[in-house]
Image (cartoon, rainbow, N blue to C red; front, side):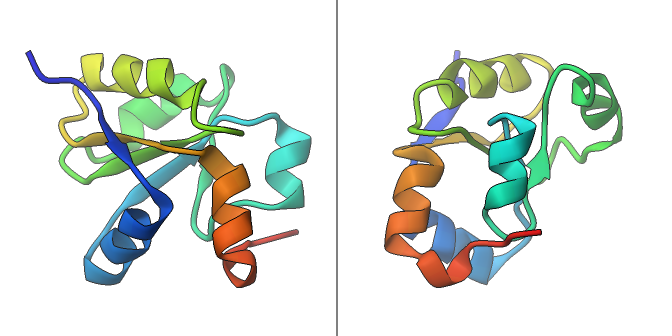
Length: 107
Protein backbone atom coordinates (compact mmCIF):
# COMPACT_ATOMS: atom_id res chain seq x y z
CA UNK A 1 0.00 0.00 0.00
CA UNK A 2 1.46 3.36 -0.98
CA UNK A 3 1.66 6.27 1.41
CA UNK A 4 3.36 9.67 1.34
CA UNK A 5 6.54 10.40 -0.59
CA UNK A 6 9.61 12.43 0.30
CA UNK A 7 10.31 15.66 -1.55
CA UNK A 8 13.33 17.95 -1.42
CA UNK A 9 13.17 21.74 -1.73
CA UNK A 10 14.49 21.76 -5.31
CA UNK A 11 11.79 19.32 -6.40
CA UNK A 12 9.16 21.50 -4.72
CA UNK A 13 10.37 24.51 -6.74
CA UNK A 14 9.95 22.40 -9.88
CA UNK A 15 6.47 21.27 -8.84
CA UNK A 16 5.42 24.85 -8.16
CA UNK A 17 6.61 25.96 -11.59
CA UNK A 18 4.73 23.19 -13.39
CA UNK A 19 1.31 23.11 -11.81
CA UNK A 20 -1.02 23.40 -8.89
CA UNK A 21 0.31 22.30 -5.50
CA UNK A 22 -1.21 22.56 -2.04
CA UNK A 23 1.26 23.30 0.76
CA UNK A 24 0.39 22.97 4.43
CA UNK A 25 2.70 24.11 7.20
CA UNK A 26 2.28 22.38 10.56
CA UNK A 27 4.70 24.54 12.56
CA UNK A 28 3.37 26.68 15.39
CA UNK A 29 1.43 29.83 14.49
CA UNK A 30 4.23 32.24 15.44
CA UNK A 31 6.79 30.45 13.28
CA UNK A 32 4.33 30.29 10.40
CA UNK A 33 3.62 34.02 10.66
CA UNK A 34 7.35 34.82 10.80
CA UNK A 35 8.05 33.07 7.52
CA UNK A 36 6.63 30.37 5.26
CA UNK A 37 6.73 28.97 1.76
CA UNK A 38 4.63 31.26 -0.47
CA UNK A 39 1.06 30.04 -0.68
CA UNK A 40 1.33 27.71 2.31
CA UNK A 41 -1.64 27.29 4.61
CA UNK A 42 -1.19 26.92 8.33
CA UNK A 43 -2.55 23.58 9.50
CA UNK A 44 -3.12 22.72 13.14
CA UNK A 45 -5.68 20.85 15.20
CA UNK A 46 -8.17 23.71 14.93
CA UNK A 47 -7.99 23.90 11.12
CA UNK A 48 -7.42 20.24 10.24
CA UNK A 49 -11.02 19.07 9.83
CA UNK A 50 -11.97 22.07 7.69
CA UNK A 51 -8.91 21.54 5.49
CA UNK A 52 -9.77 17.87 4.97
CA UNK A 53 -13.34 18.79 4.05
CA UNK A 54 -12.47 21.65 1.69
CA UNK A 55 -9.18 20.66 0.02
CA UNK A 56 -8.95 18.95 -3.35
CA UNK A 57 -7.69 15.42 -2.65
CA UNK A 58 -6.52 15.08 -6.25
CA UNK A 59 -4.08 18.03 -6.14
CA UNK A 60 -0.57 17.22 -4.88
CA UNK A 61 -0.18 18.06 -1.19
CA UNK A 62 3.14 18.97 0.44
CA UNK A 63 3.44 18.94 4.23
CA UNK A 64 6.08 21.21 5.76
CA UNK A 65 7.35 21.38 9.34
CA UNK A 66 10.54 22.71 10.96
CA UNK A 67 13.08 20.08 9.87
CA UNK A 68 11.14 17.41 7.96
CA UNK A 69 10.44 15.07 10.86
CA UNK A 70 6.95 15.96 12.11
CA UNK A 71 5.72 16.32 8.55
CA UNK A 72 6.15 12.60 7.92
CA UNK A 73 3.42 11.30 10.26
CA UNK A 74 1.23 14.26 9.26
CA UNK A 75 1.67 13.35 5.57
CA UNK A 76 0.82 9.71 6.33
CA UNK A 77 -2.27 10.83 8.25
CA UNK A 78 -3.47 13.01 5.36
CA UNK A 79 -2.85 10.19 2.89
CA UNK A 80 -5.03 7.95 5.07
CA UNK A 81 -7.74 10.64 4.86
CA UNK A 82 -7.91 10.34 1.07
CA UNK A 83 -5.21 12.62 -0.29
CA UNK A 84 -3.59 10.65 -3.10
CA UNK A 85 -0.38 12.49 -3.90
CA UNK A 86 1.15 13.51 -0.54
CA UNK A 87 4.73 14.59 0.16
CA UNK A 88 6.78 15.36 3.24
CA UNK A 89 9.26 18.18 2.62
CA UNK A 90 12.71 16.84 3.52
CA UNK A 91 14.57 19.30 5.72
CA UNK A 92 11.38 21.28 6.29
CA UNK A 93 11.17 25.03 6.33
CA UNK A 94 14.70 25.37 7.70
CA UNK A 95 16.16 24.01 4.45
CA UNK A 96 13.68 26.00 2.35
CA UNK A 97 14.66 29.34 3.91
CA UNK A 98 18.37 28.47 3.61
CA UNK A 99 18.15 27.56 -0.08
CA UNK A 100 15.49 30.08 -1.10
CA UNK A 101 15.63 33.08 1.26
CA UNK A 102 14.08 35.27 -1.42
CA UNK A 103 11.09 32.89 -1.55
CA UNK A 104 9.93 33.27 2.04
CA UNK A 105 6.56 34.89 2.62
CA UNK A 106 6.20 36.95 5.79
CA UNK A 107 3.39 38.92 7.40
